[in-house]
Image (cartoon, rainbow, N blue to C red; front, side, top):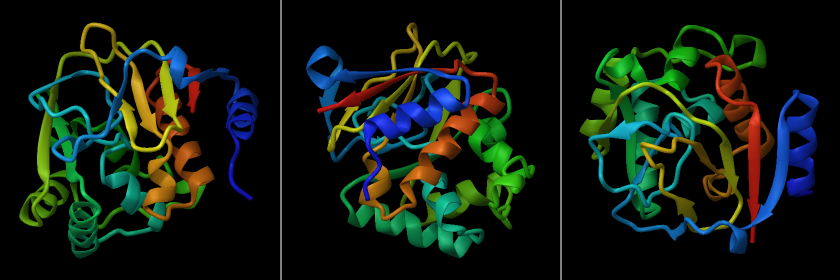
Amino acid sequence: MPLTPEDIKGVLEGRGWEATIVKASDTPDMLPIDPKGILKCVDGRGSDNTQFQGPKMAGGIYAIAHNRGVTTTEGLKAITKEVIEAGHVPSVHGDHSSDMLGCGFFKLWVTGRFDDMGYARPEFDADQGAAAVKEAGGFIEMHHGKHAEKVVLINLVENMTLDPTEDDQKFIVDGWTGAKFGLDVPKFLVAAAATVEMLGGPKKAKIIIP
């Protein structure tokens, strides 16, 4: 049985979040997915990338590897190619202060913060992961500035996304991507929520529905 918006709201509230369900028609910043947009991390900070109309998942394509238990660079390269074949530009990111460890999701994963949720750690470090993605045809994004996200937007409207605005930061999770890539959707969304919690982000979500 598919996960409903009410299910997601209930799970978040059970974790101590404030969660509301809103319609896409009441969310003016919705944008159609552009094939040139990168499939990027949910990170709301400024970036050297300008192609923001791609899907957003925690860690970029690391979200897919994490959910499937893929821990090798060869597996990561295969996911990179899969994302290209699905019509998106695959990416992972770093930032200007921590280089490729600037992705909070990957740092949590590689340092074992997801161990108690049953996720095996990657066998590669941040630099090796980025090199594998680039070699397989992916994009390496670099963020800058400090995290100042005020809300988590969980978008369930297929083939739509939102633009992360540097001066009004928000975490954007395109929840529909879980089903598109055949992921365990509840685990995908809980991992995203846990990431925000472990990084000290806002426990406030808006769940966007058609």
